[in-house]
Length: 281
Image (cartoon, rainbow, N blue to C red):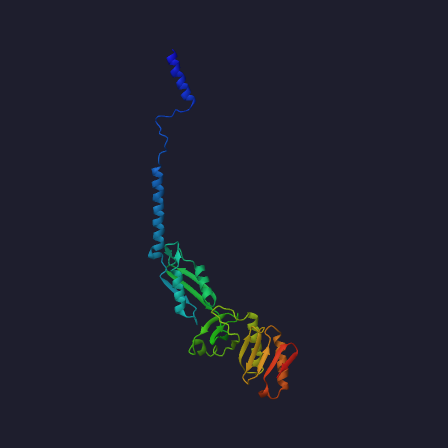
């Protein structure tokens, strides 16, 4: 009896210590092979589908059509667009794919690199359409012995390369007024050399001079001297005026002085920058 009690007590101690386990289980969880194969197959299918969409010729931009170009270098434009299409997208692909192409990104690039009033980018099947509107040429800007075209917003549109430039051959454009930077500051296409208000004031003054029979050769601007503006007339004397002041009042004062001067051959300058006080020499 004591021998039986020993084994009975031993089993009770083992039960209380919870050291027992199901002999049919080894403690390891089964590997979900089916789920892993399904997920792997789905990933491979998606990868194959994406690769097919991003590389198939049917979804590739094959033709670029640029319209609205008048004076800009078409070769430079085409090179810029081609480079943008070759930019990487999703690491392994390029923007020649219609699904990866960004019209907004290309539009911003063209706006930054060229003097454009507007850019419209469209995509139809395998053709990329780009409609440009160039800024209107209104004046010439000369600095560092180089000539540039500037629009009404004071933005540099492009550089005039030589005397055979197309803009110099057009009767309505070759007579644009010439503004010379006395400080010889370098500029680039897209740079702002004048504010819109300064351009408007300058053209208003030049128009009044033309109506009054005063022929001018060019306008010289000195930014370091406080927006000092000097207009050089064909007879040789200079007219100093203020683009930020009352243009109409300055012109009226000029006419009064010119009426008092009978011989302008000895005239050196007329200074209109000090309100109703006009100085001349």
